[in-house]
Structures are given as C-alpha cells and as structure tokens.
Image 1 (cartoon, protein in one colour):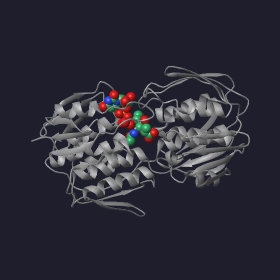
Image 2 (tube, rainbow, N blue to C red):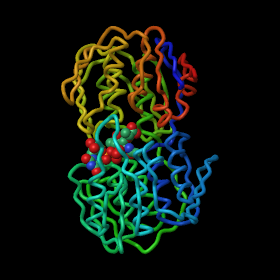
Image 3 (spheres, helix red, strand yellow):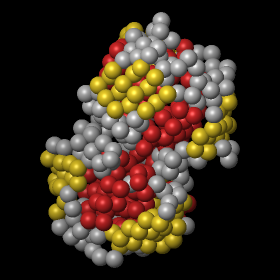
Image 4 (cartoon, helix red, strand yellow):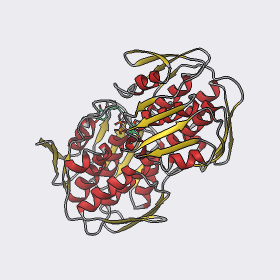
Length: 415
Ligand code: EPZ
C-alpha cells in the first residue's frame, strides 16, 4: 500500500492550480441518469471517487470517458440497481437514488453502511422520497424504492443535509407538481447541480438559500456544464502556506465559496489577498490560536476542520475546535499527537495547545480530510513524516504530491 513521505520545514512558494470540486462532480454525474443521452462536463477532477461513480454508472449501462472533458452517454442504461460492492467504497453512490426513482419509477440501491466520521444515516433522503409518494422498503441491506408516479411535496429537513438536498432536488425535477425543500443545504455544490438541472430544462428557484422550489417537468435534455473549483482543496492549500510560513497563489478559485475559511485564517495570522479568481496567501506573523466551530455553508466547513486543527497545533496559545456536523470526526487527533501536538478531546470539542514545533513520525490516515491534515502537519514538522493508508487522500485530492513538489515541498510516494 502506498505511503507518502514528507521532509518538513520548507516554506512553500509559488502557484498551485486548483482542481474541480469532487463534491460537485459526483452529483452532476449522478444527475445524468435523469436524461438519457450524451452529457459533457469540463473541470472534472481525476480522483478515485470519480472513477468509482463512473464504474457505478457503467454497471448500469452508461458509457463514459474522461479525456480533456468528461463525456457520459446514459441512453443505454438498463438496470436501476446500485450494488453493495460499489456503494460500500463510496457513500456518495446514494446520489443515484433520486434520479433513478424519478426517471425509472424504481431503484434498488445498497445502503451505504458505516463511516469512520459518523453514523451518517440516509433517513432524511428516504423520508423525503416517501413524502413524494415513493414506497420505500429496506431489504437485505438495500433500499427498494418504487413509485407509480412522483408527486410534489413540501419537505422540511430536520437537519441540513447536502446529499439529501441534492437527491430530493433531482427527484423533484420529474415529479408531478411543485416540491418545496425547507431547511435545505446551501452549499455551492448544491447550486452547481441546480444550475445544470436548469440547463437540462428543470424549473428550480432558490438554490443556495434554505428554501428551494422545484416545479416538475415531463422530461429533461442532456447538456454541457462546468464543475466549480474545489473550495476544500483551496482551503487545504491556504493552510499549507500558513503552516509552512510560505507564500502561495491559488487559482482558479471562487473566493465567495471560501469566505468563512478566509476570515478564520486571517484571524489566525494569515494574509490573504483576493484578485478575481486568484488567492494570494502568505504568513507574515506567528500563528494565532483561535476558536472554531463547524457549520453548514456559509459557516466554516466540517471538511476543513482537520486541516485547520493542524495549523492550530503550532499556534501561539489555546484553540477550542468544536465539530458540530459529524459525531466522530477527530480520528486525526491521535495521529497529530504522535507528531508532538498537544490536544485534549472532550466530546465534540478539542482543546489544542500550540507547541513550538512538530517532529516527523510514522502516522496513519483514517479518512480523506484526516489524511490532508497529516500532510499539512508533515510539511511543518522537523524531519520526515511517513503517512500510510493514503488511498484515503487519493479519493479527494488530485495529484497532491505533484502540486506540493512544484512549490518546493520535499514529498514522495513509496510503495
Ligand atoms: C456531504 O456529505 C459531503 N459529501 C461531505 O464531504 C461533507 O462532510 C458533508 O456533506 C457535510 O458538509 C459529498 O458531498 C459527496 P450530510 P453528506 O448529509 O451529504 C446527518 C468529504 O470529505 N444526516 O450533509 O453525506 C449526518 O449524519 C465528505 O468530501 C442524517 O442524520 O453529509 C450528518 O451528521 C465527507 N440523516 C449531518 O446530517 C440523513 O438522512 C450532515 O450530513 C442525512 C444526514
């Protein structure tokens, strides 16, 4: 299994190209099931999760290729089943449920199963579909969904859910009547998806606000769309500049998608200039320890919590980090402590006391963002850090070691 080795202590300097967003590309690819035919996306990142989604849709009969652009033809989809073997490797596979039941009036989708960061049930997805007239049964680890016809409904989410909002928004596009999603997720990835659905002929209002209204239509037509830049990758490289005391420019970015991240990092002592779609970041003072709570968008994203914690491990005081979205998203804490960090956990909060410096050691990645956090800590640590189980990293970061090497990092992959 691949490992990453990082010799830390080098201030990173130069330009980092930002890739398309994994969490925008995945629902877009699932949405192609709503309209049989040829779809084309640009700026789709080359990631393990994208290949998993490709495999899932080709299992259903779709044909896709990922050259300069991502092309997919769904005109020969012949099954509405998403098997456990594929779903178990990527929870986001559940995003095919809404489009399949809307387009084919039936779906058999494996339940995603457990996840290291939390229980992550899909009860809100299923409850919403039931309100739209879908009969839902759970059998042998599968969701069996059937509907004579989908009808519009008012769905009020008990809790903000990103893929729940995306699944029901897609299903509602082909339902009879009007669907209103209340307490909906406002993430930029939801908006990127809604923009494509509208391009295909859907009638959607309010994407990006807590209330989304969808008026069903009889059919949608394939089209062309662009994936937004990855705001979490952007945030990760902002921290890379801060934790190494370097100076980076990042582009193409959407500054409006990373405002909460920028604000928090500026409080921590980073200087971040916004120039059109480019961010210019450097650290001109010591790292200030600041508190942080994760929130749904436009709050500070949970997918940046671990990376932010790595920065706070070398802060000039004490930082209280509270994880409000997932109940078990502190797996990286023990690994950071192996690098010499001082962190105490108390339920959903972590008290991080800044130390003078970290020292390199062998550590283990436990999930996607935890692995990014360990890469950042390794870039700052004295000596060599060896990160194992980096298959987690490859799920969501395109060519991370090539991008880091290009700005001066001493990083290499070992089998
Ligand atoms: C999306 O996951 C992202 N994944 C996650 O990114 C991200 O962490 C998360 O949103 C929150 O921002 C994709 O977009 C593919 P949720 P999702 O439903 O949609 C609870 C990464 O690192 N909940 O918004 O699965 C749930 O348990 C990944 O790229 C229910 O209880 O997250 C959690 O506590 C990790 N019942 C909270 O809501 C439901 O039916 C938010 O989860 C649905 C969710």
